[in-house]
Length: 291
Ligand SMILES: [Zn+2]
Ligand SMILES: [Zn+2]
Image (cartoon, rainbow, N blue to C red; front, side, top):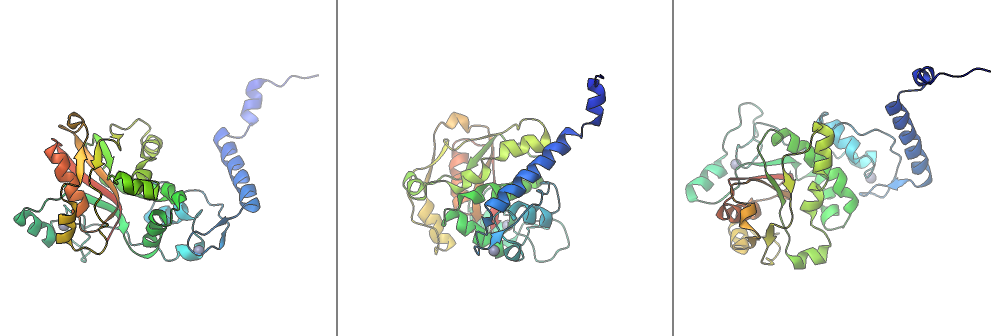
C-alpha cells in the first residue's frame, strides 16, 4: 500500500487554466456539433472553434475572432474599414492622406466659426460600411440582439484605444424616447456598452473609475427618424429633444456619450449641448461606426 503525497499529485496535474481552456474547447466543440450556429448574414451553418483574439490584438484578428460565432467565414471576407489616424481631432473623421498628424477638419473649423455645437472628441471603431454596416442594421432593425456582445467588444477596442487614459466620470448611452424604446424593445447604444465594466476589469485588473447610467440623460421629445434629413433639418428636428434628470449628477462631470452610428453629429451635438447646460465639464462621444 502506498500513499500519494498531495504536493506530488499537484505537480503532476496539468495547469488549471490549461485544463479549463481544454474543457471549454471540448464543450464548445460538442455544442457546435449538436447545435451548429447559423450565419446571421447568409444563413449558412458555422463551425467555429477558434479562441477569441484579445481586445488588444491587431484589428483584423479582433474583428474576425469576435464575429466568427455569428458570421460565416465567407461573409467575414467582406471585412470592414478601420478608422485609423490621422483623424480630425474633433469629429474623428479619418483623412484621405495617411501621412501627418491629427488636426481639425474643414467641417469642424466651419462649425466652430458658425457656432454649431459639437462634442469635444468623437471617435469610432470603424467606418459604417461593408460587413459592419449590415451587422449594425441587423442588430438595430432586425432585432438580432445576439450581436450586442460581439459589436460591443469591437467598440470596447476603440474605447481602450482612445479613452482608456482619459478622465471620464460618466458613460451615457444616447437615449431613445420611451415610445421608440417600446417599439424596438431595447436601446442599442446601451446594449453596446453594457459589458464595458466586465471587459475593463478583465483588461485592466481593477474596477473602472467611471459608471454607466441610462437614467440621467433622457429623450423628452419623440423626434421623427433622422434618416433622410440633411444636417440643417436634423438639427431643427432635434432641438430640445433631450433633458437631464438630476443636474447634480452632471455638474462638473466628464462625460462619454455612446451611440451606434455617427452620421452628421447632430444627435450627439444636441445631447452634448443639453449636458453642458446642466454643468458637464466635458462631453466626448464613442460610436461603433461612423458614416
Ligand atoms: Zn454567411
Ligand atoms: Zn472634424
